[in-house]
Image 1 (cartoon, rainbow, N blue to C red):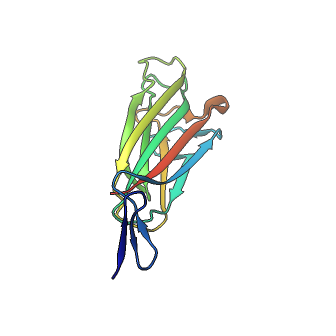
Image 2: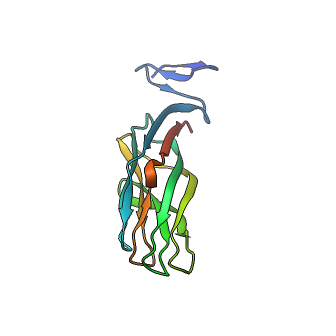
Image 3: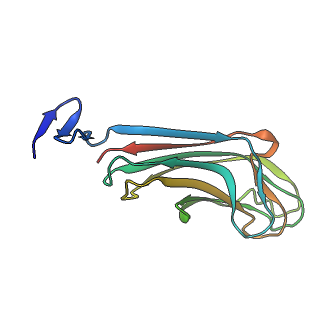
Length: 161
């Protein structure tokens, strides 16, 4: 097999695939939503914040940046709070917010934001879906995201290794 070493483009193999130098961003995928999502139990519900990336190399890392906005807890239960978690292909990989918005009262709480960054190693070149979910982790009242049309975003960056 032949290969060309180029300080700018990384390695180019005879089949024309290019492996970038470690640390370079190979691609970026971004998605935003203002569609509200809610849960009234400890069951996790998709927030409509989802993005798909197809890594070019199985050795790549995926840097996930999330800004989950417009989070709200209702007035039903003293123990209501908001949980947010990040999933890859249906499996939870990070839970940045747990008990968010907890007030120890039936007061409504809204306007909360949850931001996270997570460096994942999916070890695949197949299309990979990342998404967030929300739940009322301790109560029975409604909790939601993107309340009142607030915009949430998810950005996926493939990083060469």
